[in-house]
Amino acid sequence: MYVCLCNGLTDQHVRDAALAGASRPAEVYPACGCTAQCGSCARTMRSLINEHLVKISAAGD
Ligand code: FES
Image (cartoon, rainbow, N blue to C red; front, top):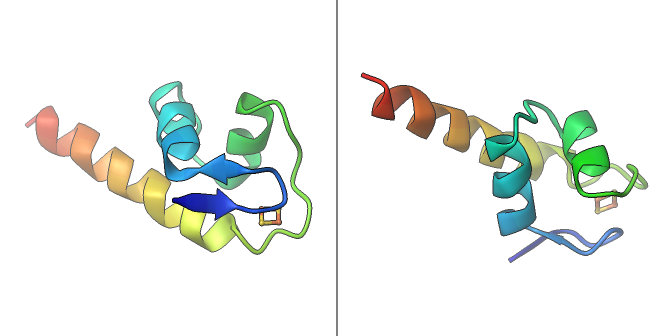
């Protein structure tokens, strides 16, 4: 699913960036080689990153 239409980023791009250490949208864009444009994807990105962090912390329990 596309998360960021301005940059053509999918949920997989966001998960991969989170896996590589991005903890907020401002870190996802450079990890994907792009920059924030309209910013309307930030909320969805934040949710995906948070889901990812919850999974990591659950896996570490
Ligand atoms: S939809 Fe991501 S910056 Fe516009």
